[in-house]
Length: 210
Image (cartoon, rainbow, N blue to C red; front, top):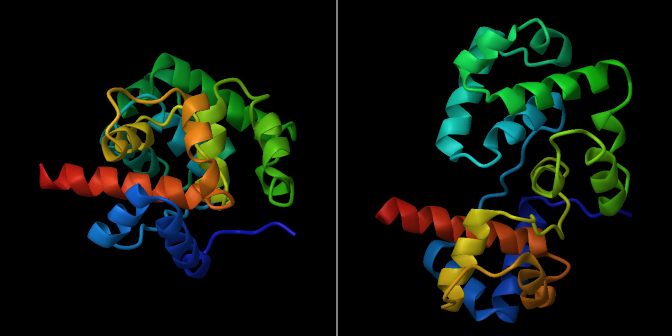
């Protein structure tokens, strides 16, 4: 049976992690429970996550908001493919991201990729299926697993905010490599998605104070 994150087990997991890790105990004591950060699975959210690749969340959110406005909130594969490249560039898509999102829309329409069928698959199988699509790598697949499918034990690979929060909380000179980060958070299992949320929570709360 696959465990799915919800508001109740997120709180249980937060207490567990606070007992396991002093840094996460500090975050919880200072800032309370992290948000669940649940997103609706499917094409629209995947486009949003692709927009978030290697740019600020504010920039990605602004571009996605413009996209929704132009499509009257109907961000579906067929409607998305009606937009010409020059309009997508005006919205805020890079040339690469235009290519990635168009290929994603086409893959869904031709049945090559079916997001709704991912729900009952194991985490690693989902990652393999998602990474078959051009433009979807570890980070995008991990964020989809953690926030859309609400899998509880995901450690997003290459997430800068998460790594920076960990660096500060642990007093490290530089951000850890992913293998080092994995090794240093083994004791967070089976709730690494909640550990991640606590790090994001810390990162965002401390940035608001600046």
